Image (cartoon, rainbow, N blue to C red):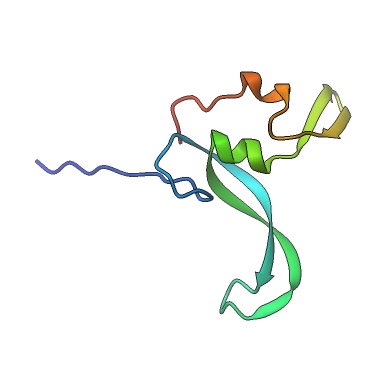
Length: 90
């Protein structure tokens, strides 16, 4: 019998932790085909992030419903993070 174990590392800190797959805007300074320098641009990438890296990198909170949403900047140690947790991993 062969057993295969899949390790999922956080794309930012490279630690083996429970992660959540999220689509996140990333500022690139190289083109993604050959890595040549270009003017910086934003591209949405699907990332595996641990809870600590999500707290550090996600900086906008939203609330509301039915298209009437409000957004505000948040700090990584804000109390809004108290109930946030990744359950199970990706």
